[in-house]
Length: 552
View 1 (cartoon, helix red, strand yellow):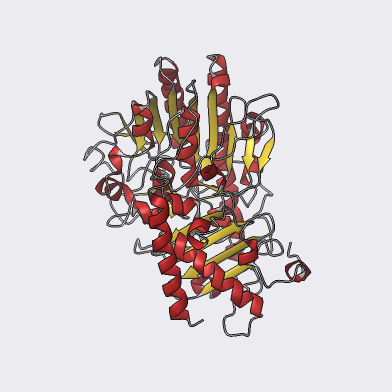
View 2 (cartoon, helix red, strand yellow):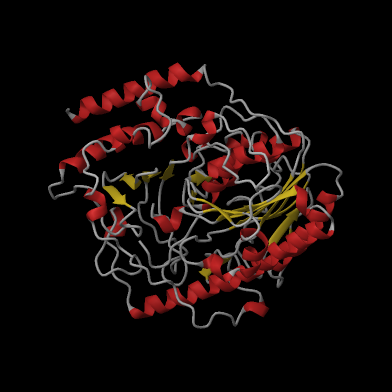
C-alpha cells in the first residue's frame, strides 16, 4: 500500500471510531467508596529508576516499599519537569494540556494559568469533594517572586511553595506561604526547610477534621542552580545536608551496556554523541554521588511522614505515595526517549494494599489523578487520558470493581517531547554566557508491553525512527528500524502497524488514549495489545525475537 494511502486510511479510522465511541463512553462509571481516605504524595525532582538511586534510600524501603506495592513499569509522559507535573495533576497527556516546556511561552506556571488549569486540576477537584489540601516545595517552573500572586495557585488549604530564582538553590531557597510575601532563607538548606514545612502542614491536615491530601515536593536530586547576583545562572552539583556530605565515597554510576558505549546508538543528536573521556566519566561519578547524598534528606522526610502519621493514629487510613516527576541519565543515551529518562520510581502503601507486592503492567503519571479519584471515591472525569492504577489487595481484602476502561492502559504509554534538550551538571549545563547547551529533542514515542511483546518505538521530528525489542535489548542499544539497510519483511510490517498506533496516540483524547485498539479495530473492539497480537505481529516466527542475543 502506498504510504499516502496508509496515512489517509489511518486518519479516517481514527476520526470515525472516535465519533462512534464518544457518546457511548462519555461518563466512566465507578463504584464509589463510602470512606474517604487520606493521601500523602512525596514527589522528588529528576530521580531515576534505572541507576539504583532507590537502593540508597533504606527508610523508603522500610516504610513504603516493603509495606506496599512497587510499580516496576511506571512512566512519565514527558521527560521534563513542568509538563510532566501538569500531566500528573490533570490526568492528561502533554499534547492535551499544551504545557510543553519549562518556561514561557510554551510552558511553566504562566502557561498553566493561561490554559485554564488553575480551576481544573487535582487539588481543586479534591476540595470540591470535601478534602483539605496542602503543598510544600516545588510546584512548577517559572513560578517566581514576581508572578506568584498573578493569580495565586488555587486549590490549596495551605501551602509553602518554592519560587524562582530560589527554586533550585539548595542553600539560598525562597519559599512563599499561603498569600504571604516570599521569604528568602539565605543559608538554610532547602530539604531541611521542607522537613519543617511538612511537619507543620501534616499537623494542620490531621487537625482539619476533613480527609486530607498533602503533597511534599523537595528539589533533590536536581542540580543546584543559583542566580549569581543578577548575572547568568550557575548550575552545579546537588548539595546534600552536611550530615550526609561524606557518604558513598566509592559509589559510581552503574556501568550498564548503555553507559558511555563504544559505538553510538539511538537517533537524532544522541547518535552523534562522542564517547566520554576519563575526566568526564569521573565528573559523572562525582555528580552521581552528590545526587545520592542529596536524596538522604528526602529519605529522612519519608520516615518523618510515616512516624508523624503513626503517632497521630492516622497511618492506617492514609495512602502514602513516592515518585518523581521524570527520570534521569548520566552517561547513558536526560531528555531523550530512553528508558532511563521516562521510567520513574512509583511506590504506594495504604489501607488494604498488599505488602511487598509488585505490579509489572504499564502505568503512567496520567494515571495518578484517576487513581486518587478512586481512592477518594469520586466519579472519574471523562476528560482523563489515564485510568486508575491496579492496587493489589491483602488477602481477605475486597478487590475494587474495575470497569473495562481501567484495564486497557496496562500495556501501553505514549511519551512525547517538544523543543530542546537541556544538559546538566559539570558536563553540560550553563556555559560561560549563561546559555543552556541544547539539541533538538522533539519526538513522539510508544512503550508497548503486553503478555508476549515488550517494544519501544519512537519517531523524531527529523523523521528518524527507533525500534527496540526490550525483551532482548533492555538498554536500547540495537535499533531494529530499517534506516539505510535492508530490513526483514516482518520488521517493515511491524513498523506499519506501530505507525497506525502512533497515529492514534499522538493526538488521542480521553477514551482513545486508554483504548487505542477500539480505534484501530472498531468492529472487534479489541481491548489490549495481547488481543491484537494477531494484528501487531502476524508475520514473526515465534523464535525470531528470542533468538537474538540478550544484552545485559
